[in-house]
Amino acid sequence: MARPKIALIGAGNIGGTLAHLAAVKELGDVVMFDIADGLPQGKALDIAESGPSEGFDANMSGTSDYADIAGADVCIVTAGVARKPGMSRDDLLGINLKVMKSVGEGIAAHAPNAFVICITNPLDAMVWALREFSGLPHNMVCGMAGVLDSARFRHFLADEFDVSMRDVTAFVLGGHGDTMVPLARYSTVAGIPLPDLVDMGWTTQDKLDAIIQRTRDGGAEIVGLLKTGSAFYAPATSAIEMAEAFLKDQKRVLPCAAYVDGALGLNGMYVGVPTVIGKGGVERVVDIKMNKDEQSMFDSSVAAVKGLVDACKGIDSSLT
Ligand code: APR
Image (tube, rainbow, N blue to C red; front, side, top):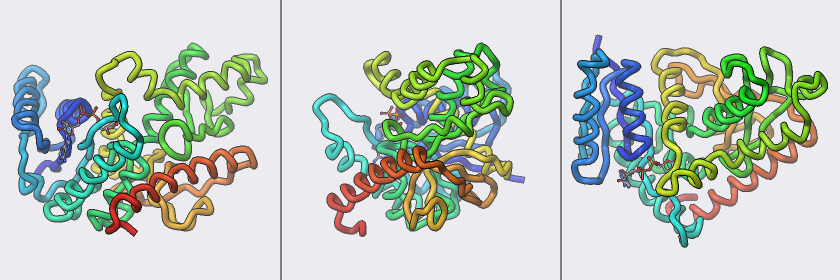
């Protein structure tokens, strides 16, 4: 049986890390696409040359021709630019919206049956635009944010409690970044919810609030340290977890930016929600009940995402 084919659109920091992880985990053959001359080819060759030592069987290739992604089972999109000093949110939105148009058309023409995971920011608006431009079914197009946000939350909690990260679960909803909604009562250490752990004296409410804020600011913290770019190891690992759930029909329950139509009181929009990912792509949105405070945080997050989508519609009149 042929190996699955994984197309990585964007061969920058995240794209290169995705390729390396996909190879080491033997998820399939990898083709990296980028407009930068030689970059995808160079990274693909470099990773291929790590194969004999690591011992993986996977073909690695780089291209600047969309025809080479033909028949991909998974496409992970990181193409675009990150925000630079002096650039407004709308400037970034305008540039990356154009990138989503070319990527969406490339995927529609050459890999219309792929499961598409978008990582390009601003995530919730970009995944919506990518779906619109590609015309793929909504369940086959989603965005990576929640897995990363919850991984950061889990890491900080494990540190605070001095327990293994494996025993910490975290639940986040809403848009990526500032408006992310961490649900403390659904986040646990070995099943014990965070509010109970505060009552048990494992931590204080103040410390928990600080961890939640640090999680929301997780991307900015890394940018502040790196100075020349944004996070790439954890974002790539998170997207690979989602791709693996699809390729191996794992039915993983993972938070991601998914199209929600009916659940959580929403009518047809992309936002971060808990989902089930298996061979059908986003197979289910988990329709949880929120309390008043959680609902109001979620509503603000939804409003922020709608604002970005409206801004996209203002920039490109073909989007309605
Ligand atoms: N088509 C294909 N590739 C493109 C296009 C395009 N139209 N425009 C830009 N690219 C490529 C660039 O050449 C670059 O190699 O996208 C790549 C982006 O890589 P990096 O700048 O290293 O960015 P990275 O850290 O990988 O992040 C990518 O993910 O988390 C988000 O905010 C982040 O939007 C950013 C994206």
